[in-house]
Structure formats: structure tokens, C-alpha cells
Length: 244
Image (cartoon, rainbow, N blue to C red):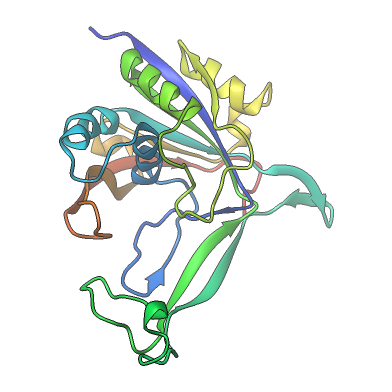
């Protein structure tokens, strides 16, 4: 039997975005970190190229880790209460309006390789002032490899999108038990005060299903081709402190 350990991570940034049901030009965000996003972050730190033999070997092992997240409100008072997590929507345009004859070098390229005459318009959501604790549980050797990558990442790490840069170190410690990992994230506060999203082993123990269990992150040079996810059963526990 493998040695089980618990890895505590802190996801703290001015902006975060955890895509869950994004389609085409509307890019929404969940109110909790997605497993595909967290495992993708670790994969980037390890330098695993999309579709590479290294990713095909490592991703199933990373995806086998069980994940739970804790919403940690910022301890900043606003109007007599804790600072809330808010959704921010960005009306985003890319390209368009260039003169093909005189500004060819500035013409944005479509995924197919052709020039883009008109701007691409998208609506992109972010979480403002969000802060989460994430606990990954599983094989200690695999978690130790994740820690080494997070402390000396090969590629940059971010929370959902490249503009969502961590505000402080992510790694918060490796522990023998779940309560020890929780203490590293929330101190001596009672865990019952916090809203949690916990991965469960069987359907009846859960309250919802998320299609965020990573199977493949696709191929290099493509944002969608080859991506594949499986369903993950989760249990949402609402804490006594409101997080929105």
C-alpha cells in the first residue's frame, strides 16, 4: 500500500478564473477551483507539454489524487462584514481594424492560420478577491514531485488564466493527516465555519457532479483539440461564514 500524504496549497490572487462550462466566446468561472485547473497548474510547473508522452504518463497519476477546496474569506472589513468574492466580467476584444496592405505584421492569426479581419469578441469572467485552500490527498511520492515543481516551476503557474498570477507562495506544507493540512490553511478556526467542496468516492456521498477530472489537456499548439475530461463526484458543505 502506498504512503498517503496531504498537500496543502493556498490559492490567493487579486483575480482568479476557473473555467467550468465555458463555450466559444463566453468564458465563465466556477466559484471554486476546478480539479482540472489545479492539476493543470501542477502540470505546467512540471513542464509537461500537452499531448506529450510525459503528460500521458504523469497525468493519470496526478488525476488520481483526491482534491478538496476551502473558501477562505479575506479578513478585511467592508461595510461591517468580510470582503466578499465577486464575479467580474470583462468585455474582451482581440484583433481587427488593421490595414492588411500596410500593417500585415499586426494582423492577428486565427487558429487555422488565416488572417482575422474582424475583432473576436468574448465575455470573460473572473473572481475578484477570492482566496482558497486546496488539499490534494494521495501517494506521497507523487505529491513530493508536485512540491518540487511548485517550488521551482519549469513553466509559469497561474489560477485559470495567465493574467491570474499568485499573490503569495502556493505551497503550504505536506502533512500526514487531513486535519493537519487544514490547520496550515485556516489556523485554529473551526473547519465547520468554512465552505468546502470535497471529492467523494461514491455517488451517494456527493451532492453534485463536476466534469473536471482531467484525462488529457490536448495537444501543443491547440487550445481545444484533444482535451478530455471525466466526471468527478463532489460534496458541497456550506460554512457558517458567507463566502459570496
